[in-house]
Image: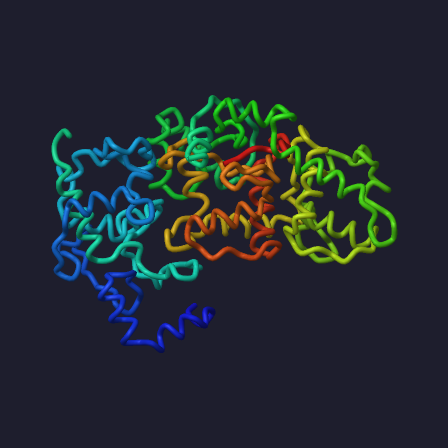
Length: 160
Length: 293
């Protein structure tokens, strides 16, 4: 797939410099710096890369259309946004129904739970993408962003 | 600001009207299961969820035009030829229809200045089977072919603006005719290839057409209502793009939305997809120029 885009080889030739730049900016995660994870049953008990999530940042990512965009499909306790999707289940009180590891797997790759799902795998390995647009063959969220979203989801308890 | 207003306009929901039968046997079989288990009587989310878990079968029973998913204001805009912005494309298309080609003939030489000699029933059968090439032939390819053979013009690239305008005019002349693509004959394998692509996950978002347009028809995707992905209104005037748009241009935009690399206009993949999406709406009236998001 990479061979079709010559510019990408140039990026790769830049090698260490590009990697450093990506790490420094916390930019998109390509195949090279993908953090491997381990599922146990239908959960990923350990945080990706052992990172700590920030629930406030996670809430912003859940709203952002170019990031999590959870609101596209789920109703959530986000009153300042008017349009909430009705495709997936509402996420009110989701942390009462699922534990952290279960939520993490659903954010990382819901297809492990339901192979027919419409929900994108936000940390699915880019090698599984079919015809990604040039410049998008990286995970939708970074490992840190996944942990932020999971930390936010863990705050959705009880009636809000 | 204007984009938001348009989104709000197009996003609102409107009541439906019964349509007609389409789709293949496999779906009909699954539909039978759904009916027996009472799923179709359940709420839409329940139904969509159940089918989502059962497989990527169509969640809808009858084809419904995208028109039915538009708010009443936009429906009125489409119905009123003085308000419908797609009518400018029809007029430009008619001018191109009457423009002489290399040998001095124009489309009008055979089909009449107002296209009055075009047969709406024949137009409604496109894409047809091209025995010479053993492939589907879309209406746009037919128009291009006419230009080449009758007007002695050089063929235009697929989705060239002039071709889209001509296609818009020609399909407008068949407004109201019921889409009637024959997929039981030699077009069957191409139809099935199109259906396969319709159900193949693409792009960074890893979704297929079927996810939105079969499984979740009627549900809200943030501020828009998902329709069945029917193409009977195309070429349509698209409010988010502010221009007339062919079916394959719409495919391209859907691919980019899913962050997938589109196929080229006129490619085998998109021709098959056009065949599939047109035929699954067999029985719907041609609405060109429709107004869509």
